[in-house]
Image 1 (cartoon, helix red, strand yellow):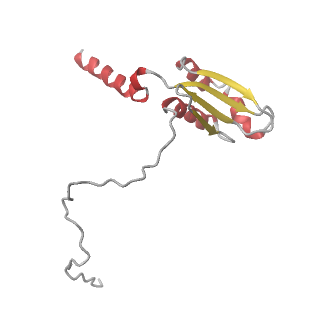
Image 2: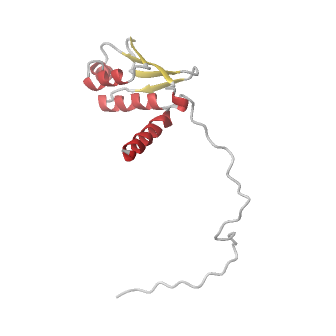
Image 3: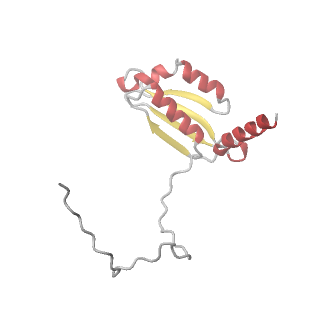
Amino acid sequence: MAHVQYLSQTIQSLDSRWRPRGVWLLKQVTIRYCQHGGSSRYARQLLGDHRFLKFVEENPQVQFETEIKGARHPILIGDYVKNERKVMDIKNQDIKFIMKQLNRLRDSSGRKMTHIKKPVISKRPTIQGIWQPDVDFPEFKISDRV
């Protein structure tokens, strides 16, 4: 019984890594597609697909909307709690790829990726020692094998 309780706590902790303090950050997903365009073919098929319908049922915290926009490529728009927005292109992508993108939208926080500009400077010297350009290495010879 203790093993089952530990396992359920582990699963809950893994599940909560995407939700700080137990709050889902994705508020709304808008699927924007063209009614006639060929690049929107899979986006139109997605709306009746059983995987998408199951995803909608499993995520009641997310509001799903569709928007028909003529002569445009399909996109997914994710709106987050802190007024952040992510837009993902799904032009000519199959349903499996679109479902992966929906999962990414749901699991992300909505913040933009940031680049670390400064290198890490440590106060501790390396274990291997500091590299010196004048270090004499033993001579290395390659002999031909016959």
